[in-house]
Image 1: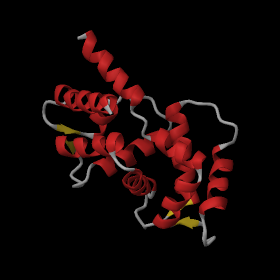
Image 2: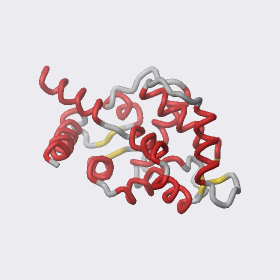
Image 3: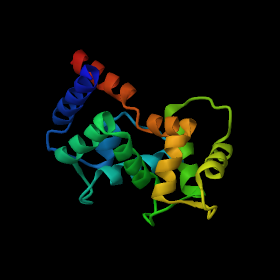
Image 4: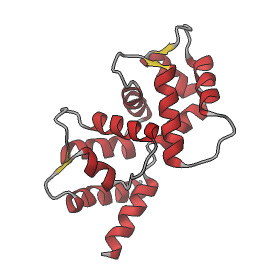
Length: 179
């Protein structure tokens, strides 16, 4: 709990230091988190994350939106996180996640995290759909997504890693100590 509080405090201080205007544009968001030179899939994912954090849809993440997002990521209950992930993964906003949306997210998360995997992104996506698309319609509803994630440890792990801010918080802390 103390570590989460430190990460939250460090994150809010960094926002105020790095963004004195109190608003982050998409470009500043990428710079703030050190996200440069991304693949197309990874870039699309970061843009979707930005739009999801930008709750009032004004093209900026203001301090309150940032605090709300950071609080959810660091302190939120699993149910809250899963609902937020669903919103993040539902790129077209139609209330369902199709294979293409999930596949692009998985590719992006892998590109950002840079880890080797036993299965391809396509194989992983197919496995997730085989396991949690209960009605077999090729789309994941919010209910299927939440219940499936709770039951599928590997899928839950991928989602949690997609917003793992540990390396980002370490980078911010190192930058703060070097100044």
